[in-house]
Amino acid sequence: MKINNTILSFFVSVLLFFFTHISAHAFQVEVSPYEISPGDAFIIKVTDAKISLLPDASLNGKTFYFSSCGEGCFIAVGAVGLETKPGVCTIQVSIGEKKTNLDLAVRDTRFPTQQLTLPREKVFLSRADLKRVESEDERLKTIFETISDRLWKGKFMLPLKNDISTKFGTKRIINKKKVSIHKGMDIKGKKGEEVKASNSGRVVLAEELFFGGNTVIIDHGHGIYTIYMHLSRFNIKPEDIVLKGDVIGFVGSTGRSSNSHLHFGVKVININVNPVSFAGLGL
Image (cartoon, rainbow, N blue to C red):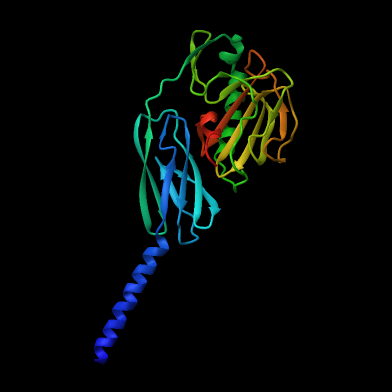
């Protein structure tokens, strides 16, 4: 009888460990929206997590960064690039040893085409200008690859409440020869109109660039950046901490621009994202 009690106690201990281990790692996860276009953003939300470990999630080699949204709740913002082909993608999510997969549908999307005429020197660059652009691109690459702590709070807003003149993803044919893809959105504006921060963050760049003219970049944390181009002047400086709605500059036509407007861009883990899609997320 003593041996049987020992064996019984052993099996009870094993079962308790097993069920405790399973329940400690159980969680629910969803992606929203389920169906997106190339270049769109989405949310991964984990709930009912029984441990405090941050989840891990990735898609096509890109890692998403989670933060707390309450007890047992974690949220991350993800995106797919413009080059993503239509079909179903698989997001891998894990907490500790517990893993699951999520489906994300990418719809077939047709983007508009636009003809532009610009000064020749802004399209076909001199050796000196090309060297400058390459140097600026290296600096921007370093900025966008930096992952910092979360600073954003709640939903993101568009920085200027005017009509859109050029949509994200537009194929632009410049001077009937050069083709480029518009990786942000152009918002109509009059010179001097206030441009506001899309969300809380830290200013990591505020200077004149060859293509963007007077440009502001805000780091919101977790690989999320917003970009504001062609400003007439700045209202902030690098390293400033801004809040959502703060005036960071004013509409202009500096850089490669033919009229006053705001070019607004969003980067998520170094992916160019449709700002309209991003601002529509239920954060």
